[in-house]
Amino acid sequence: MACWLRARPALSLAMPLGQARLNLSGRTAKNTLSLSGRRRMITLFHKLTVILGCTLFLAGCGGPAELEAPAAVESKPFVFNPSIRMVAVDPGRYVRVTDIQQTITLTKRFWIGTHEISQKEFESVMGSNPSFFKGETLPVEKVKFDQAVEFCRALTLRDRKDGRIRQDMIYRLPTEAEWEFACLGGVNTPFSFGVLEKSGEFAWSAENGADKTQPVGGKKPNAWGLYDMHGNVWEWVVDWFAPHPKAVQLTDPAGPSGGKHKVFKGGGWSHEAKFARVTSRIMMAPDMGINFVGFRVVLSETGGSR
Image (cartoon, rainbow, N blue to C red):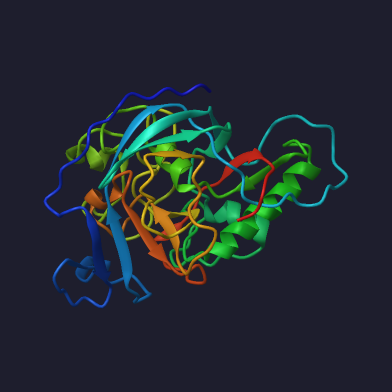
């Protein structure tokens, strides 16, 4: 599916661009947000960092694969039919605006899941379910970064063997750039649904009665048919956390080659809707799982591992 995006304006918020500490213990300091009260169900107390920004999108999509290709296995005749419902996204470029303006070029086509991975999907592949809130149609959560990566590897092997995807294709986590582009779905606003006041139609957040996760796909999708890109659970992306580079031109960015924390995106049931902006980001150690973080997958041709 070809995708072409128009330029989007920067967003002005009362909170200055930069970093704001989220203190899950409930104590509030300068530039600190408290997740007490209705967020009391959060089971992990850990300091997270939110990076706020805004995005300009011009056109297209694509992105690098970052998982090594699993070994070839005996497979059925190929008929393209991924186990995960997906939307195709073509190469192109967009402009991200945070403290600087960057033109980002994405050179490779990919497919992205229309839904966050559900607990039923996760358990069917992995044989276990780490989620705090239980339910087959709920998004899997409390999933560690490496568990999400292993899910992608296992699903790749299964779908290759069953002839659902080509032998040169892999499931993986999206890059932050791929995720941002897909989230917007062709609009020129800070959210795929336009203004913040419409968030209740598209996103489960702390402001619309969602004190826990909700079944995937329960709100309206964006223009490309992607559900829960804002809200329900935050979503792991493959990038290691670092401040965005200062270069004004980037091609297929995938973050630094290493680090201590991974990035997740999109907002969730535990946070106010304003934190679901396309360029908002939180970082967390990859060996941690928390009940407001899940993931969705992309499908692409094979490439290097990150």
